[in-house]
Length: 256
Image (cartoon, rainbow, N blue to C red):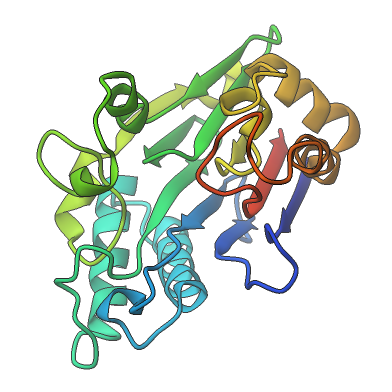
């Protein structure tokens, strides 16, 4: 089995708000990965005394532990429990009702000898490579559909008819895109935050099979380096408008 991951902040002077981890538990053929992209907070920090990296570390760690230790729970159930556990860790000190309380996108994957279970919430991406080399993206495309409709995205966060992120309400876990695939049908999986997927989703210089091919050939750090080249060529975001000229970027590849 090959496992490679890389993560890099958008700017070195700003803390990285992403989280990624892969675990291979003892005693079995299974494993799990969790990738989170923390949402940059407003100037008032969303009414929270804690940083986004604190939140993503708490949520990511809880989700990974539950995914491994509770195979009786679905990944939706694990995410719901992890959100509750994280909210309880700062419920008494912070305003969790603030619409921009710390939150994150989520990709979670769990596999054993029989099947692979996946979960995607918001705009990080999961890529499944079949044994014949076909690459299938698993996307939660609600943000893209809202933008295509010409709607302002920010006011529609965690609202009916909008899009959803993992914040303080465990009920959002039910909104995640989920599925199962026979493990024997897969050769590899990859997960990327939107910062690492900019070649596909922002600059239009790559497609999902091409991104996956780069991950396999050169690894996640090479993918991030390619994104940085595109960003450096347009540092102010004038040629290609985007919310942030530079973004945290994280990618992970698992070959079975």
